[in-house]
Structures are given as C-alpha cells and as structure tokens.
Image (tube, rainbow, N blue to C red):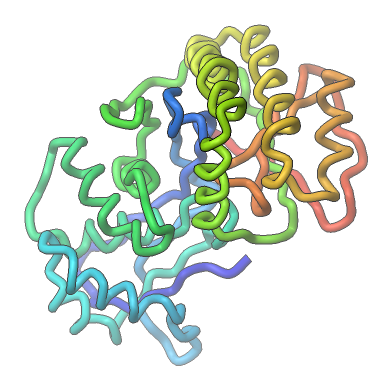
Length: 303
C-alpha cells in the first residue's frame, strides 16, 4: 500500500488535510448513461509536511507529472511548485491503486497550494482537475480531485455535478464495508478494456438498459434512506458485475462474491476500476460476513 509523496514548497498556514474519495456508485456505468455518487472518505488523507532527514524520496512519476503540468496547464504557478519541491512534501495515507483517489487528493492539494486564481464554478474546477489528473490515468473526469478539494458528496451525470446531502449515511454506517483485496491495480488498462467491451452490442445494451438504471435507482435509495430498495439494487448490480465484469474481479474473490449474492447476507461491487484494491460491500442487517480468503481484510468506513 504505497502512497504518493511529492516535495513542494512551504506556504504559511497550509495545514489542511485532503481526504480520499469513495465512488459509492457509478463505476463504468457513468460512461454509459448513469449518474455517479462520490463522497469524501476521511479515514485516508494527505497533507503537506515539512521535509526531514528521514523523508522518503518522491515517487518516480512526480518529476514527469510536474513537467506535464508545466507543459499543459496554465492555471498553476508551476514555477513556484518546482522551486518549492525541496522544502516540504505531500504525505498521504491513501493507498495507490486501491480505488480511493490517491492521485485525486494529490491534484487537489497542488491546485489548492499553487492555483493562480480563485474559482467558484464547480464545472470549471472539474475541468481543471480533469486536465491535471489525466496524466496518471490517460483520461479523467476530474471527479476524484473535486471531491477531495470540496470535501463534499457530489452527484454527477458525467456533465453537470452538484453537492448533495446524504440523509441515509447514519443508517448505512456499520453495514457498508470496504474489502481489501491485498493488491493494487492500474486504472487505465481496465478502463480501456471496458471501452473495448462496449464495442460488443450485447454488452453495450446491458450497460445502458440494465446496469445504468440499477445504479440510478440505488443512488436514489441511498440518498433517500430507502434501505430495502438499496439492498435490492446493490444485489442486482453485484450480479451484473459478476456476470459481465469478471476480468475486474480477482479469482480468489469470485467464490465470496457468489456466496454474498446467494445468501443475501451481503453484496459486493467494484470500487472504482476493480481488478484489485478495495471492493465495496453492503452487509444485510444482523448478518455476519463469512471467513475471508487469506490476505484480505474488512474496513467499515464512516461516511
């Protein structure tokens, strides 16, 4: 579970923490017509820290990313960023390749420190963050950095985005869980694989006519506190992903995934791109999880 570390310049009074993000709903289906719900996850976060003698060296990609920012991004003080690289670093507990937005928090923190102007328009912010983060994934919606930057739950249809209240959060806390698969993954190749699958008419039809509607209903149920409907739609999404997204589910997780669907004790779904990292589960009330495969563990996030 490594984390990005980037050396940056000290700015007086910058003590803010930038949380991880959790894409509760909308992984892949957002690309095929559904909405997506993304929330800050404060159990993991990054913050600026003073560089010391025992500070680890920066991530190999950092120098390439800064060069990319200097070449492609006009809304940052890139000169100040590069000059400041030796005095502080961005220390993060957000695991890389786990679907919790490690690069998004990094982008949010750099923009907050080195942005040249103040922008209140969410659409403009989202576009700027997409441009910053696409270096890491090949493409980016900008939603991950935006969630970390605003520290608010965000609902989007892929174009418009707005903050929302989560009235159901107290009722799902303790039932929503993250399953740590014990391995990281790269987002870009998995997204490319999904887009290739969408060239198949049957898969494209499933995404638009089955998966996207289930995600939209699940979001409404989650935000509205309709837990019975939420369980039903979560199980529906879980079954569709087991049938059509098997390449995004590790082999040693397949049996557990099926047990959850069949027993209705819990349901698992992708958390971001899948393939590794965290997977997101919903436990039925008063039900216990079975023994997990070796190397896996469960975390219960507080939303």
